[in-house]
Image (cartoon, rainbow, N blue to C red; front, side):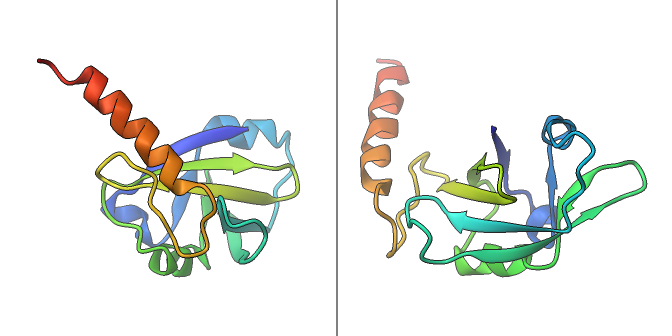
Length: 126
């Protein structure tokens, strides 16, 4: 399953996950998840605690703030999460230029930037 979120100022300390993702887990309530920046293989995994509020909303909590700092995630960044069924997410980061943010350990970000720039040019009125 894949879903996206946009970084908002409040989300720097914890990140809510979509209700449909929680439903897909079919009652399973993991205590931890692993995050990795997509494109870097398994070079760096981040352990993140999962918490649920009284309404059943699921959050990435302890460890999320460190992930945000490590990848310099800022207000307005667009994140695509891909769940791999092993309590792990690959996370693609797009900055405010609409391009995939390149990181030193990234294998495939530059091609995605070219793709999004070409779409942006096609959608720009003449």
